[in-house]
Image (tube, rainbow, N blue to C red; front, side):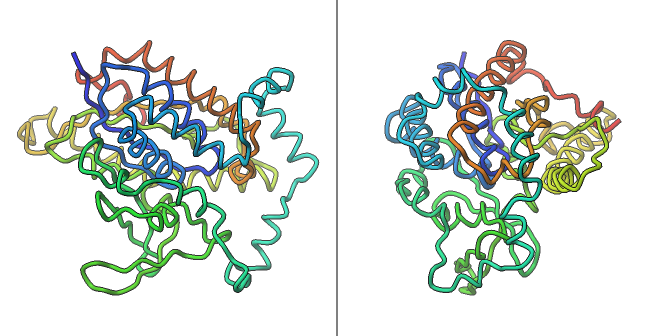
Length: 344
C-alpha cells in the first residue's frame, strides 16, 4: 500500500547536503509517494531538483539530478573520488574544529562587518545563479509531480512570502537562499500589484514553511528534514560558539512556532474543544542527526567543500535509513515526533 507524505526541507547552506542524502535514500522507497514539498534556501534547491528530476526520469531521475546539482555546488566533477579519500580522513566534525582553530574568524565574517554585497558594483554576481539556471523550470513548475512551495522573506515588510507552482523561477530559488551579508537582495515583481519587491533568505520567516502543507487535499503526514540542531547541551562561550548558536536559534524559531501551533490544534481536538475535521490533525515526523550537526558550525555552512558535502550526504542517507527502520510503519497512521514532549 502506497504511503503519501509531504516533505518540509530546512535551509542551512552547505549543510543542505545532508538533505540531499535523505532524499537520495527516500527516493529508493517504491511505496512512498511525495505529494508536496515545502523548501527554504538549500531546501528550496533540493526541492526544485527533486521535482525536475522526477519529471525527467521518476525517482531515479531525481536522484541523478540531485547528484548533479550538488556536484556543481561542490565544484567537482565526481564526488566518488571524494568518497574514497574521505575513508582516510577523520570525522567531518573534527575537520571543522581544526579549521576553526586555524582560522577562528573567517575572511567572510570580517568582510561582512566592513563591506556590503552592494559595493561590488558591476562585478557582482550571485554564485548560486549558474547552478540554479541548470534546472529546467518548465519541469520545476509542472502540474504533475509533487506540489512545490518555496519560502522567502520580504525585505521591506519582514513577512514571509511563499511562492508556489508556476510562480517559482530561478530568481525565487536564489531569493530563498539570499543571505543579506553575502548576496544582494533578489527583486521580483508582485504579479498582483506590479510592484517590485526585494527578498532575502526564507529561513528568517519560514525554515521551512509548514502551513502550505496543511491543505485538505494533501496527506496528513509532514516529514521534516531538520539540519539546524534544535538542542545543544553545552552553553556557548567562545565568540564562534555564540555566533553559531544564535544562527541556529534564529533559523529554527519559525519552525518551532509552527510546530507549537500544530500541537495547540491537536490539544483542542483531543480535548473535544474543536470538532475533528474542522482543522487538520497533522502527523509530524522528523529526520535529523543532531549529534553530527552539533559538531559543525555556521562557518561550514558557507564552505561547500567536496569532503563536507560527501560526508553530509552519507550522514543523510544513514539518518533516513534509521528513520525508515523505526518509523516507516507510522506513516499515514500516527505521528513519530512527540510535540507534547518537545513543548512540555
